[in-house]
Length: 336
Image (cartoon, rainbow, N blue to C red; front, side, top):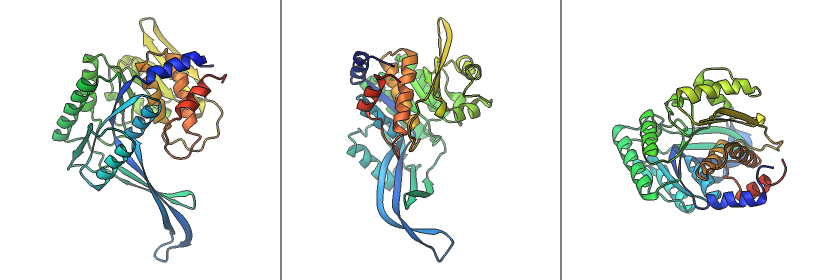
C-alpha cells in the first residue's frame, strides 16, 4: 500500500491547487490510419488507403495534459513554427482547454510533427517534420522574457523541463530557467535527453530513463544492482548538484536516490506485472506525477512509488494518453 485512502485524497486535493509551468519541446502526434490490400506498382511497398486522420498533442504538451488530468493547472511554454502545423497545434491546445499565451511562434522554425502511418492496425512508417537546432538569439530572448513573465504573473509551484532534443531547451535556456527558479524558490523537475544531459545543474529532480543515464554519463548501469545505480546517481548528486535522482527502469521498476543533510539514501521500487500495450508517453506521466508530488511536498519514496504506478497505468493503453486520475487514486490505495 502506498497511501491510505485519506492520504491519497488529501494529496490529490493538494494537486488541485497547484500550478505547473511546463517548458520544453512540443509537437503534434499525427496518425494516418487506413487499410492495406495491395502492393504499389511503382515500388515493392504496401499502399495504405487512408480512412482516418488524428492529430494529438505530444512532447511537453502531453505533459501539460497529464498535469491537467491530475487536477492541477498546466501553464505551457514553448516555441513553434509560424506555419500551418503551428495553427493546428494551437487549435489542439484550445480544444483541450489549455492556454496559448506561453506559446511563441517563430518564422525561423517549423512545428515538430510526427506522422505515423498505420495500415491494418500496424505502424508501417513514421515521418518526422522538424528543426532540431537550438533557438536563435531572437527566439531565445523571446522565450526567456515569456518564462520570466509567466513566473511573475502565475507564480507556479513547480517547473517541469521536458527535453526532446528539438532545440527549445538549449544549455543557455536551461541555465537561465534554473537561475530564475532558484531566485523565486521554485523546485525544478527535469525529463532529460542525451544532448543536454550534463547541462542540468542545481536541479531539484532529475528523471532519466536507463538508456539516457547510460548514454549521458557514458557508463554501464545494471538496473537490478542498487550499487550500480547508486554509483550513477552519486555522480549526478556530486557533479551536477542534483537533489533527487529518479531513474525509470522499464520492467524493473524505478530507482530513487535522495541527497539531503543526512547524506544519501536510495531505493529500487519494483514494477507491477501489467499487460503492456504501448510505452509511449509513460515518461511524460512519470515526470508529471513526480513534479506535482514535489509541489505538494510529498515524502520522496512514496513520490517515486506513485510515479512508478502512474507510468505503468498509461502503458496499458494504446497510443499516447494522459493518466486516469481516479484509477491512479484507486490503485494507490490498494495493496500492491
